[in-house]
Amino acid sequence: MFKKLFIILTLACLVFSLVSCKAIPQTQPEETSSLNSSVSSDESIVPTSSVDIAAISAQLAQLSNEDGTGEIYLSMPISEIETKLDTLEFSYEKDMELSLMVIDGTLYAGSSSGDSPHLDWFWLQQTKSGLKIGDPKERITEIYGAPNQELSHSYVYYKDRPGERPVDFMVSYENGCVSRI
Image (cartoon, rainbow, N blue to C red; front, side):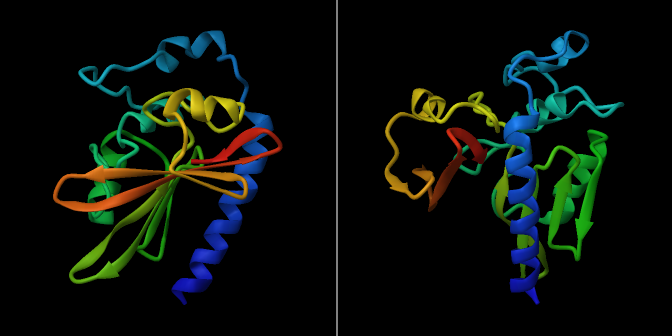
């Protein structure tokens, strides 16, 4: 059952990512520029009241780091992520208590072990370092340097986490642009 859910979610996000590669403009609309500007770590995140995909992606990027740490972190209970998204007024869909997909395409997916489902991996539309779906492939190495491993259409970076297992941070690309983070 989980395998079917994973395949369905993967296909849905892949389709969204491929569409996003061409759909997200590289320049931001004028009326949302204040929400889309860089948010430093000491600034609060502005809740969303209308659907502005670029602003949502920029805000969600501030919640998680590439190494799996942050306000939304690996191993975090899915119920706590749901509470965080509710507090920030993000729209999302929940699937069988194991995943949450935010309206911009950001996906938080977990597995169940023990008391409650917890976060195993997530796909972002934008990173805290500024990489976005739709960016040129070259921007990946401009921001993160040479990858630890290069796969077909993906760069993999290993991120150490003190006291925990390392995290694979993977960026995929199609047709010369970032398609999944």
